[in-house]
Image (cartoon, rainbow, N blue to C red; front, top):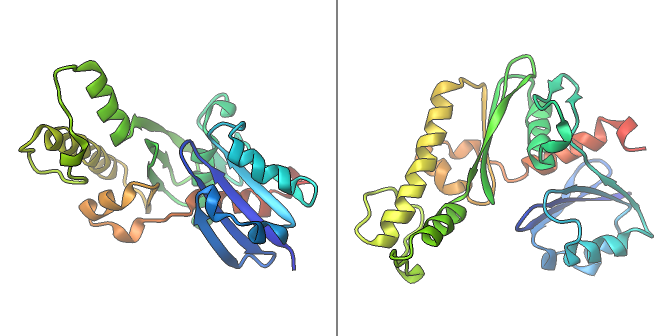
Length: 243
């Protein structure tokens, strides 16, 4: 039985999944350190999505050990796929993670989709009933917004040990005022998108999405593997791309 390794190499972390040739998921994890040599010894095909740097030494260490033993397929952003149409005039300018997330959603159900990804950046993409990508949004993450604010306001003293994550009540300390304001802005943005774009499927993904799902009362919309699901679809249903 062949063993398939799927890698989602983002800006700040790696997600991986090992599947059998019959598409059964056997193991998964987050981070390079969780990928042991025992995991890699049986791999016969590696599927790869890279958003961060290709020169990441940990990523290169994993790939160098695989190049001589298996085929490595790296996903690229496409202009269209099985009725899903990219809105970008130059698809190469769209991060492959966004495209694969849309492919993952579209392969699960052909209909209207709203995908919200709260990770290193806060992203959203919208697909209509016909498969047309209507466009999307990219915002700074919580950490990026906080860092930008503190960099430009020398007199604001932020003590990390006083911070309370994932609250939206009015802050009663500088830390809470900053963090809760950022959280509220992202929640309001998500609520606006949900109210404005009536989608048959709402997808919430990304490393920081759990708190958003709880605030929206949409925990059943959370998925951790949407990009990897899109990577599977890219290779399983696009044989001409994987030769």
